[in-house]
Length: 511
Image (tube, rainbow, N blue to C red; front, top):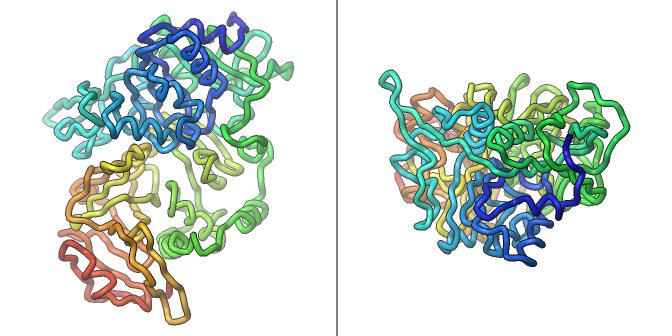
């Protein structure tokens, strides 16, 4: 039976050099109180130090130096394996300055590696990342000069080149649940997702490590066995934390995020209308989404990314498409409406939630009909960088799993950034001020998406901006549409650092 202890008592079990595996999805299912206790112990004792942190999604917080990344900022961490760095901005800066050993791997590959570790495997074999930055021939997973390890290797099976990802060797599990029973069985009824909680517990216990779980309360409500996410036999320490919140950074719990207060189609439509943003700052994103949503069809199973793609859901709702499609989140939610901002990763009124590894099974198997995802850079061949720039490290997250195997990929990006100002009038769209940074470039800094892979996989690829639409042709980008009011020569072609093909039947559309 697990021991019921304070967070400080549980953290006292962590030794110098340990590897901690987190069950976070950014700020969702985030064991925040365990992180706080870890920080306080290091401040007081200078231990534990030389830690390795492994998190398949990314730690939460969003604000630089937040409690989840504070242990890194304090200097107690030797290396990190994350898929996403957006919620740990101070950590990203340390990495870019060469101050922290760090590795960036696809979320889905890390999730599957955790599950494999639970089964005693040392590697997983996967096609995820072939010919992309994580391919050993590029070694883009090494984020600076300190990062010398090779967690990804290549292997040839039956004449076919594939990738091998190392599985993590965890000593400590940090997991957040909702409640436990008197015996220590963990349930997650108030969480928007469960991530890979069970696999993490199994993987750590297999190595003789310690599984630490924080919950809000001991519940006397009987749970059916199928509702128990982590059985008590896999848990070493349980910390009762009445102050924990459903999502880090948000004070109030929302029963609609965990499915205990499902919404009808009409209520979900009303929610979207009430929470949609139509201010001047969002105009570019709304114009991108308005054109992008035209690629949706009834029956589509969809993934929508963060940023401009988030507005696609709003436009789909306005077109009455939400009940006719299935929006998904890589962390596990299916149907409902993906939530942005602090709660990104959760879904409003999901119909079901599976584990992260199960969701990536579906994605890697080509289960998605279409995805809408952002881009940092696009080159003339149609390659995309969605995760890394020498001045900005966001991390790959689920980008590769989502885009490498989906039948239709729609990249949603502004044509330029850093000061772009536009006006939408009756005559069409007008560029008042061009952004300082053009998103279309001669070559991308990192390869998150390969046009060559897309051709080989038979994917349809669309690139939607606020002013025009490109499609992936045989030889690269093809300009197929332009918004009315846009000067095609001056405001599109002259700004491209490469020669783009122009479709003979180029369409002019109302923005």
